[in-house]
Length: 277
Image (tube, rainbow, N blue to C red; front, top):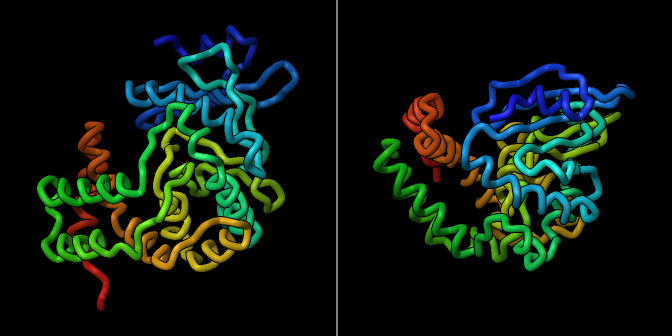
């Protein structure tokens, strides 16, 4: 693997901080001769490398369809993402305006025609696929993450409840949270890190914000006001996707060989109980 700092130097960029704590990417912050900030994001796992082509194509598709900037990668570098840094900073305490802006952004993103997204090569999941993938995760968690019988039966009832499941798939970023968004003067100024993006479950774009800050009813209401398509069981569906977070992270840890995720998931699942009826 070519040293990312050598790549930066070859582009006439001055290397700055190298962030190597992520499991999937090295991220180098750099500056050009005019002092403009750049980001170089190099995959360190094969699966992350394989996703770069679809991610690049999806970013090109959505860039002119959403109301905030997204990264635009230099086209001549295929195995590394190199782009001018977006304005703003990651928010510590998002404002009311931030949540409104996120809802507007998601409504626009989710309105992108699926046939156009399919041409980018991102993973495509139908509504039936969404339910099947989650059912398989729950099945695996019972055997590999010591999922309790109570949670198993509770989630089986959820899987069987048609009213809670999304009626359609959408183009989803799938990792919306403060760490992957930027704000400038309180307003959303950029959305970064599209590695997990796919056509799939709308709930994947609400769960991390709702888990961290609550405000789910507010997010759904604002999303609908900006044209996002909701359904009667949407709130319940997002809540269950939040509750499943230890399953998601634990299975990711198993599949990627990162034991810290598995250990944390086992600890969290041991304490997790179905909500009171």
